[in-house]
Image (cartoon, rainbow, N blue to C red):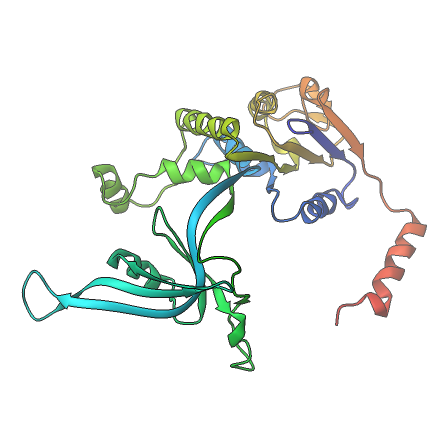
Length: 326
């Protein structure tokens, strides 16, 4: 179905938007779902086609699987070791950090670089927390408090996790879910303090960054390379365009090309218009305000108004005391 389009057509109040939201709930949090309204594309700051492409990219997910060497366990000891400041003066600097990690199989003591101690402080790690440290990058991730401390307090905002099994030093598969738009945004903005552009950007009033086609092309190359190597998996999501008759002829031409792309999500359109003039043209009328060439590509699902019998059933369900949330 990826790269195909569906049109929900029917009068107002027949549940077109509700149906799209139900699809989002059914898909779950792992599959990207991007809702938008046709009138959102009109902006003084950014091109119409740019808004459409941005939403297209939001609806395409990438699941990256990495096997990393990590040290994982419950923190039993956290001791920063200080030494005299080599620059002189009375201050002291941290030379290294001793950390003890415990799993169900055993314990291990590690000597860490001072830079990792800063990461430990940012994550607010203390004795009794379950953490993992990546062996290659030194990145620290706090997973939660060990469940042996769960009975310490009656009420607490902590998330308790079980004591890790196996050895302290292990290989772990880490799965990250990102969208292509996340990758675009991460690479569009210059890194802070590294060049004159970033300084100018900080001084000027914040304005929406327009992502170039060249940047998107480079990201697509990297994504395709990851997919070929088996590192990443593409997750086509759903783009829901409500009030699709509000788009103009230029947007429809762009949509036609975007749907033919190798990386495209499932697109659901919704419209409550019958025969009407296509926006951006003088006298070209078409069903649902969509050009005929695009209309030929979509599967049309008609939504109908409730019958009196169905209304009675809906009201009966809504009025049932057992269905009401307390």
